[in-house]
Each structure stands twice: as structure tokens, then as C-alpha cells.
Amino acid sequence: MKRLSKWFYLGSMIGGQVGGVVMLTAAAVILVVSGILSNFVVNLSYAGTWALVSCILLLLFGCAAILFGATIWYLLLYRAWSAIQDGNASTTPEKAVGFIFIPFYNFYWVFKAWYGFARDYNRYIERNALNTPRLEESLFLAFCILFICGMVPFLNYLAGLPFLAIFIITANRTINAVSGLLALQAGTINK
Image (cartoon, rainbow, N blue to C red; front, top):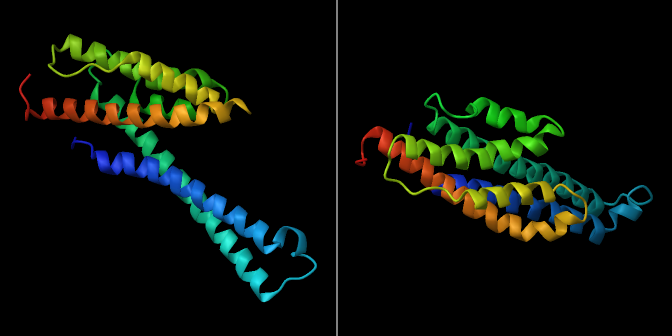
């Protein structure tokens, strides 16, 4: 496997989410400012038509950007689990990603997928006596807890900024860890 591009993964995940939120917010602002919410049925003018088209396009592109960023996040999870498959990993890359899509079970599975990855990664480097930095399991645990808090109404407002910070840190550390393992497995770095 090729090493992971930090710019691609972090840029896509962060850029997709931030860009998507900006476009969705712009669509909402255009709707409110143009008065479409109150006057659309009564007075559909030329300006109202363009505002409506702009909103629809912003909504579509915003949702596409968020979906793209999330897809890259799942791809990172898949690649991370793929890098430590030696017969002793607690799950497979397919399960790690696939089980996150099961409603309600995903509250448990996000811990297995991300916190479990950090634990399995550390065990992998110990088993194979690799000279590479360990992942901080507590950081990945905090990521999972904040991820769950982000799904709880009203609590998500408090968890949003800490989640974003820890998300960036854990994604960066995961990319570094997987890239380091891939370099070791390719033989470009000595054990």
C-alpha cells in the first residue's frame, strides 16, 4: 500500500465538512434575506427564482461536500485497520467501517472502531517490536466520547469545538501512524 497523504486526508475531511457547513449556511441566509420563506407562494419574481436556484445549488453542493469529507473519514478508518491486519487484530477493515452504519449499534461500534484501533495498533507495534511511536489511547477514547456527545441534542453544542480539535489531532496521528507502518512494511525504514 502507498503511504497516506496527510494533505489529502486532512484537507478532504476538514475542507469537506467546513465547506459543506458554509454552503448550507449560505443557503439559509439567502432564503431568509430574499424573503422566499414568506413570499415564495405569493410573489415569485425573477430575483426570487434566482435566489431559489442558488439555494438549491448551495444545498446540493453543501451536502455533497459533507458526504465527501465523511467518505474520506471512513476511508481513513479502513486504511488504518488494513495496516494492522496480522491475524491478531480485533476486527477487520470491512467490519470497522460497515458496522458504524448500523443504527444505535454505532454508539458502541465507534468505540470499537477508533479506540479499538488505537489499542490494536499499540499491540501490533509491541508484538512486532517496531520502533514507531505509540498512539495515545486516551485521546482516541475522548474522540469517541465527543463523537457520541455530538449526536445528543443540546449537548452537541458543548461538544462541537472540543470534538473538532480532537478530531483533527486523532486524524493526524492516525495518518502518521499508518504511514509509518506502511513505510516499515515496505522496508523503506529500518525496524
